[in-house]
Image (cartoon, rainbow, N blue to C red; front, side, top):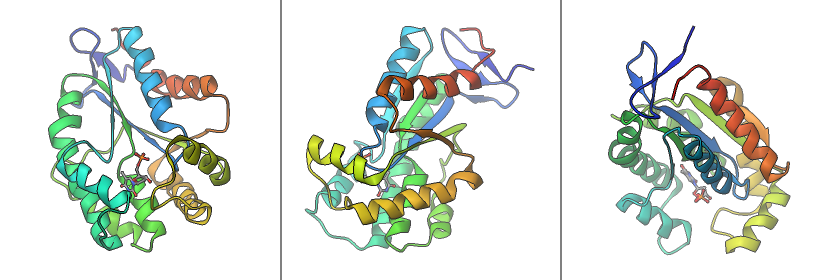
Length: 221
Ligand code: TMP
């Protein structure tokens, strides 16, 4: 049975559900390579005439910009407020950017989503169920069709991030180890596909593409 069908040039729709597009989320600790991998995956899909867009959280919308200031230490808020701000940014991002892109039939590759809030704010002591609840209550919340965890050892990932941009307020090996444990704990319940992000870049990209293309297997684009 076909799971997806094509809608318009290069667009996709989940057959029988009226849900357009394919919502793919990439998760992982800082330095897992999500952003580079996600952008490359989208380039590859586009080169093969599949409509695809890359986006990320925190967003570039006003609450996302506020969050960047919290992350670099300019503004201090408590951890629960932090979780609320991420949820507020997510609602805006979904309504203004993610859902419209899905509606056009795109494969939307989103760098971080609610699972990042559960893993990161959870590692700071906020109850993960409470975070899940506040996010799933968002008016525009959508459960992704595919969630991929790029799993990497925190020591290795930290070496990558410090080299790249200098660490932000969250990045210590002990903290990132707790974040990673939270991600692994969420794996089963939320059906994460776990990919070893310690592998070569090409290999990681290919594995992510393989998962996406398997979901889209039978479409005609
Ligand atoms: P980035 O490095 O992927 O741009 O993300 C910035 C930081 O924001 C990263 O350290 C993880 C953190 N974060 C959370 O703590 N909770 C969230 O819900 C999201 C989306 C990001």
